[in-house]
Length: 305
Image 1: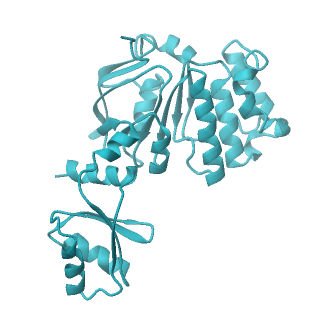
Image 2: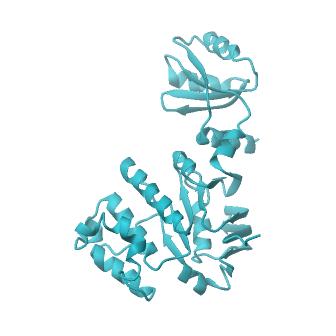
Image 3: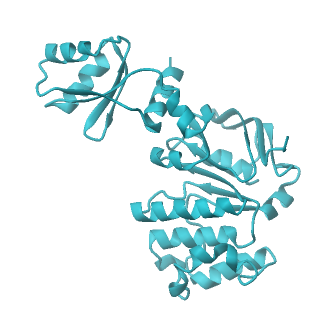
């Protein structure tokens, strides 16, 4: 059996009295596109900073490609590419100068590894003389990825790379990740966007520094073992208040123009009966297929009990 490219065992990190991550354990295989899905404050950035040797864990151990994140940090920094959540390139250097700078740091050149970044770089090459600070959000994102890839890393770590960019750029970015994955690079990505979970081979749903579930997106959704209803009435805000007070409500949260609801009672007629008793009109109730966000909300609810 092949050793995992990334192995994490009981990693914890505290900031004073605040626990950022709490005894996390997981393994990631070579060539896998692995996603950490969770809201801001879930612990994703702290975990990534430990994996990229920018922070020491308080306890536990982690290794990348067999190298320990504490003892072998210099070796790890040579084999990873890291794209932090905040744009961290040199704003007053041009696109070309930023890329040349990062290539030089790792003892390589743009020409040597051009084939690796070609599909991405051709999109920003027309602007290679423009300073990074004057690029659009999507262009900054592509430049940051090129700089993280220029030394041909074995592991690529991307912390919320699509936050703050438009929908088209988000789609293009994930298409680029799929192509990079095909070259054998192990990719770890974090995101607060639940819809991006389905684009990963496996995901870890993380909340409050704890992993609630690790599996393929399909299997996580398959574990949703109760009926889910989409509900709409004339007064969505009042309905939200009423459903949160109902003793039969298991989970209830807004999802677009509807409320998504799971109940303890298996009789869906009880929903309409209750809403009518609260004077709701134009009631629309239909059973729907859950998605990854619904699975996340249900796991959160179960863990809070």
